[in-house]
Amino acid sequence: MPLPIHRHEKMYGEIKLFAGTACPELAQKIADYLGLPLCGRDIITFPNSNLFVKLHGSVRGQDCYVIQTTPAPVHDNLMELLILLQTLRLDSAARITAVVPYLCYARSDKKDQPRVPITARLVADMIEIAGADRYITLDLHAGQIQGFFSIPGDVLTTFYILCDYVKSLKPQMHRPVVVTADLGFAKKARNYAAALDVPMAFIEKRRISNDANAEALTLIGEVENRDVIIVDDEVDTGGSMVEAVQLVKSCGARNIYVSFVHAVLSANAAERLAALPVTQFITTDTVPIPEYKRALLGARLKVLTVAELLGEVIRRANEGRSVGEMFNE
Image (cartoon, rainbow, N blue to C red; front, side):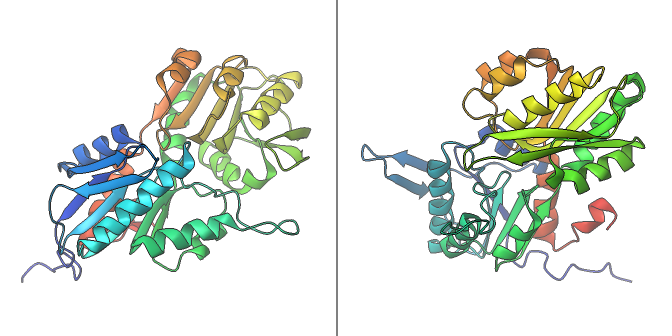
């Protein structure tokens, strides 16, 4: 009996990987996992700050993936992504997938006050209009952002990557407890607590203005004489995380571990984190961390790669295979 053939296998041609300039190391790791080269392209910034993109070879009829994350400089990285997508579309690629490990403007996901935009929806529209047929991203700030896209996509999670690493640390921890730095992250934090088989606590905070300032108010739960694992989706300015660490420490926490997905680390966030009494910072490479910021955190920083996760999803997308199978879904 002949082996079954995946309906979509080779429908879109061979995988062609293109990298923007925002995360070259991650892009190379994905290429290495797939055993493929990164395709040649020129990305030139003119004196007037306009970007110019040219491919080194034709992509007609091929299955193309643009790997570009979008932290600061946000608008340069976003425009680079959009121009790469349009370049591939105009060169008659069969299918184009935007691989965006960290999606900018994800916090602007609703009208929570009068006369404000929903910029996350605008970014989704621009990615689609630029030429993307699909998108792949990681740990969106809010699940409803998926609904802003009219194109299909894979919204992946780093939960298993981060949780497996924390599990390896658990034997050396004393009565560990998971703490969420934000009630908005409580549901995902509960998944961490369940997977680690430990209790959890919550920090209630209230955002007091439209800038990055926030105020940690109350700890709900018990952390005294326990090792604490604080979890969140991203650290931007570090304000919320600083308050969270100081609060649990004042409530009698022992060793503190901080786990988060996106290391945005704007402004002096790395300096603020470095000054905290934290045993280990655990994050991923969805956002490149400059060497001087890595040096500030030193041996306490553990960066886990998402390359294998993204590489496997790209392979499965090309072959028309289930992504949910990777997570037993």
